[in-house]
Amino acid sequence: MTRKETFDILTYKGIEKDIQRLFSKHAFQDENGHIIFDFFDQNGKLVNQEVLSLYHNKRAPYGISSLNFSETTRSVFISDSYASLIFFANQFRARISFEEAGFMIVGAAFDEGLIKKSLEEIPAKNKVNSVFSSSILGRVMDCRVQDLIHERNCSYRLSNGSVHLKNLKTGKVTIEPISSFSLRTYCISQGVLQTVRTFKPRKKGVESFYQLNNQAWDGLK
Image (tube, rainbow, N blue to C red; front, side, top):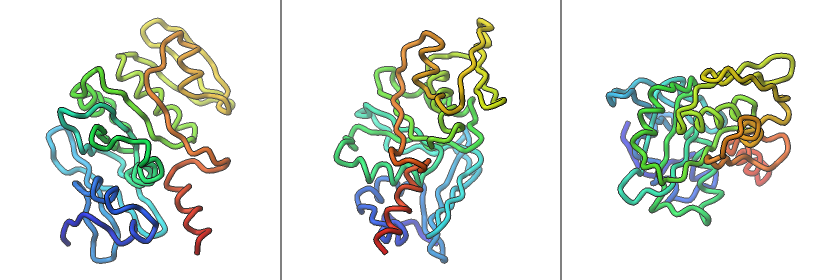
């Protein structure tokens, strides 16, 4: 197995080669053609992997994977899936300044300590964008990123069709319907300024950019 800058699966699914190269730093293609993305702990030790095959995507449970950070980085995109982030970047490539963009992919378990450490290394002036799914878990992750950036300690509990949000510092509790809960409604309920921009697929019934790409590509077969 050798590392390469372009991958058969992504080429087949219409991902531009420059986008593939951008996300190739911690990736390699195995003998079955699957793309393996490496995830690391705070000491840089390999702890997990995301696997993308032609029809399936297995996210990494733990660890973090960062790339393209430099002194010129002005915006940061955070997701819990390489696949979704790649398909997002391909769709929005005309609107993203890749020379100034850094990317952070976190494990599905959302290790707050590990993510906070990585966020602390990002200059405060950088714009943070989240690219999680439109599921309720993805929307809660949007809020947790905002919490970590502004050092807010909140808990989230799902019960009876609602999100029960508690500010652990002030004790303030708010309840929002799952159907309408978002980072925007969270910030309004807490009286705070939204600083994280969220990106979601606009197509009804589609939760992630990975799923959106699959539907589009299946329609071209």
